[in-house]
Length: 378
Ligand SMILES: Cc1cc2nc3c(=O)[nH]c(=O)nc-3n(C[C@H](O)[C@H](O)[C@H](O)COP(=O)(O)O)c2cc1C
Image (cartoon, rainbow, N blue to C red; front, side):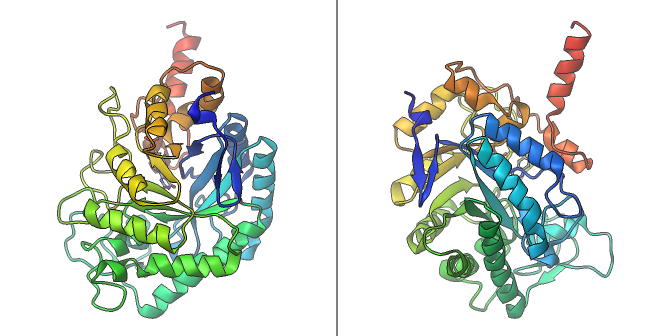
């Protein structure tokens, strides 16, 4: 049997193989609640063979609200609909984690109301790496409130039947902003040294652990390097990963920190058209894996089973995490398991991201193009 299909465990969670659906926001919530169409798309993934599905980023606090199609877990009202989701996913054999997030200053680019203000670790004037023009530095009380909100959301997640939570610590969002010396210019206990810049992560971990107990898997997606020079460097990102593993996070997914040049300095790179462009965060994942004692998920441009097998066999990661290939083909893991080891059909064009920006529900526009061509006999 291929190493990719070995059963593997994170804390008490037993997974049927090594494939993770990396968190993917889908614009599908209804007034913040998980919707029927979202549940159907998660069932398709579970039936498609993936072992662990991570939901899209989900807001833990009202200060992170942007629109009704954004998922929320900022109150108990959201629990019943999520119970339906987790039951439906479990019927297909997959496990499901919810990604808990706060956008921080990034929220500012979605705001139309002049009275509304996004928040982040520090305010930076004329910042070329931030589209948001209106945001302000958080007070200590606000930081404490957000930490408690992550803890309460994790408690709700467990009650709703999620098998794990994943904290979003990557991709330019709040925790990446705290970790990066570029966006975190604070001179209090939340800024300065690496330990201080990582304090919000560790406090969130403790707040969650207090609420969910020792046996519940608590994961983090961590940005270990920023996409431009002058930001977080990998030497520090690696230390951060080690520190988070040491305090008790049960698994680390290794990705981009703040975003640089579009799309080359981001988590979703394009032109993954050959083996040298695949697995573009491989070096980071491999090095983190060598330095921690918890499972590591590799994400970013993984497209061919042969390369995935090599990564696992060489001990460079424990899990293969996929996003765009599963938007194109939600059932591809089953096909690989049956022995059809072809490359994913995803061409990494990022039209799925454009569709989200246009307010559409997540889909692969290439599938529509293909269907139309087939209909026309082209
Ligand atoms: C449409 C879309 C939505 C995404 N949403 C999230 C998200 O909610 N949280 C997150 O951590 N990453 C998100 N990502 C990043 C992916 O999880 C993944 O890290 C990245 O796309 C690289 O993996 P891939 O090459 O397999 O697509 C998203 C990516 C895409 C394309």
